[in-house]
Image (cartoon, rainbow, N blue to C red):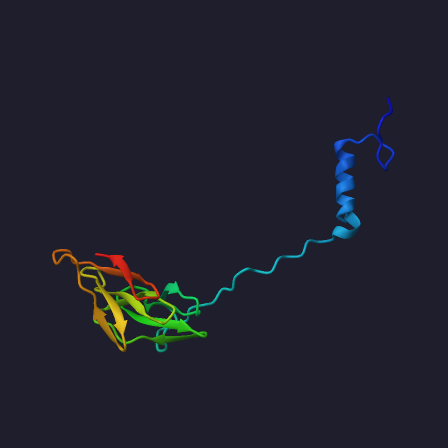
Length: 165
């Protein structure tokens, strides 16, 4: 019986086959070099505070991002005693119309710019869900008048709002 040999004139063992595969793909030590880092698949963008806010002690919270690159959330002091609804777009932050409470935060935006959020006190007692209609925040009705916290979490493109009560 003839013994089979490869082009290295040796019996085909695991190390030889690995060398053949690496050479076939041009992955030898002479051509491999230092692996190049892959470019990132994302970009980190800093959410700047609203103008006039202190340079330190500011808490910015981005709620959600739509496909148009708009981010809504809240910008306020780090003690969480006050926050204003805001929107970040094109690298700029803008205040949304003022909310009715000390803590106001947007939690959802759809593709046409429909925005929902909450307004509450610093101790998060009696949070209420709101939707932005024109330049005015409209409180959404609560399902149960005995429960005092409601949150609008999102809004889809047709305008259906989802949340908790």
